[in-house]
Image 1 (tube, rainbow, N blue to C red):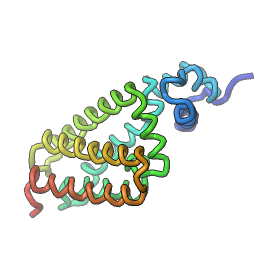
Image 2: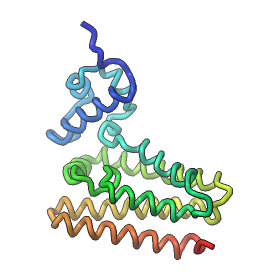
Image 3: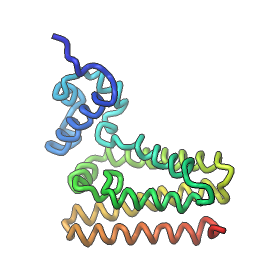
Amino acid sequence: MPRTSERGGPQTRAKIADVAARLFLERGYDAVTVAEVAREAGVSSVTVFKHFPRKEDLFLDRADDAVELLRTAVRDRASGVDVLVSLREATLRLFDDRHPLSGVNDRSIPFFRTVAASPALIARAREIAADLQRILAEELDEDPDFEGDSVLLAAFFISGYGTVLVQTARRLISDEPRSAVVDDHRVRLERLFDALRSGVLPPPQ
């Protein structure tokens, strides 16, 4: 009997990612193989790699979402809105919605613990951050309305956001009161954008 879930598409990808996340959270990233994920999801290992070229991407599966958010913030901002305002609005919207990329989602604590326990995931997260920095700089370079140093802004924004996430992760893993950590997370995001405004871009006209 053929396995219908072998078919490609967003539903198959989402199912594989959900199964992988459950197994990694239950047993630890390094203790789970791609073959086990495939078997549990009812697909072949070939299908898994079709959707996720690297094992690490089974868990760090929001990179494409992050790219789309950055591109939307640059390309789709309203006329007269500078890019830093647009990035700030997008970032705070992630926070308010408790989006998985915000770092303050309900599942953030087990996610952070799993990443922190795996050198492979930590290394892949750094690679993704470098890719996001490059992509944002390229988007800014192609924007005729952008005034400023695209490479510096991309580097400072991605690095700054990552720093806020890592500090929040460490505090949550250490079992500090979640509400206090979340409140401080937003404060530090605001500080990040204040620093970017004063140090990278001129004030909006």
